[in-house]
Amino acid sequence: MVPVLLLIDVQNNMLLPPAPVPDADRVATAISRLLQRARAAGAQVVHVRNNGSGDDPDVPGTPGWELVHEVRPDEHVVDKRTPDSFAGTSLGSLLPKSAPLVVAGMQSDFCVRATALAALERGHEVTLVQDAHATYDDELPAAEESARVDEELAKAGVKLWKSEEVVFA
Image (cartoon, rainbow, N blue to C red; front, side, top):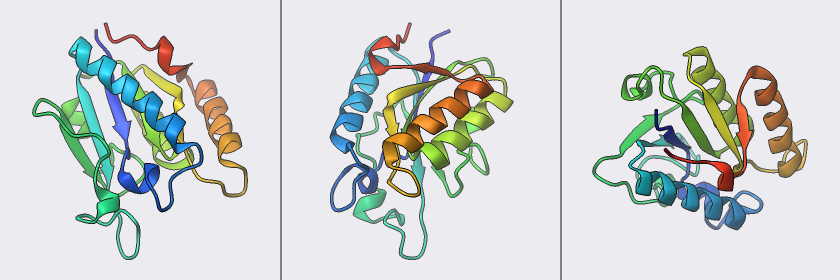
């Protein structure tokens, strides 16, 4: 079965100024290449978009909330309000039950982590694209935090691949 590409929170507020994630250009390039290959292979693509509140940079209707990539008519957008992209959304009903998932996006330690773990619990084979997810500096530098998430998810059963290793066939 062809994997589904799940792009989590690939929104302007994460990848464009004024406050992009560290190394945003590299991450954005990896995500763009994944998306191109998925589309060329006819893979299902689902864009997950965070809906912030209050003074968040991704409040619906603001420039930061907009998706980086234009959504094609055959692609889906799932709006969410929690880190788990399945919680309170239509994501579960959009995905074939046995579909393998290729996951990329923001933020490694929040939405990427929670969604990958939830997908495993639902019985999906999950591949996290190591060079196509990121987060912000916090207690740990962003790169270290993303690597920590990689390690945690690998122990849980998520496959870790580099973007050039992902095949949509």
